[in-house]
Length: 159
Image (cartoon, rainbow, N blue to C red; front, side, top):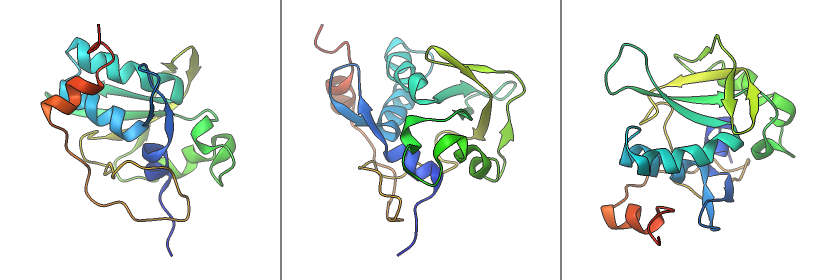
């Protein structure tokens, strides 16, 4: 059985979201992108990823191109894996088109150097969300969400 990539592991990693539910980084990323970076709903989803070492930025000079930016500092998503202690950054640097971000970025309340992965909507591929399994390379296509699913998950939907 193959091994999942460092990016797949990060996308499958779960945390407690703003609603108090467990949710994967990949699902929150997809919901935020589906709502749009320029919307309050999109920003409400994506801001939750910062403390987990992930953010999305609009590519400078390119309309409608988003990039996933991943902190190089040690991230809780990789605790207990071969990528612990910031070793995930060495792997991410080898993704096609990836580059080291010049300026330090904020991730929640911490600052870190970062690796930029171009094309947040599909490169590298965002796999189906589920519990991380470093020994599993199964994934499938990225899930899609209806407007009702997005509304139901949105942290402000109950207010």
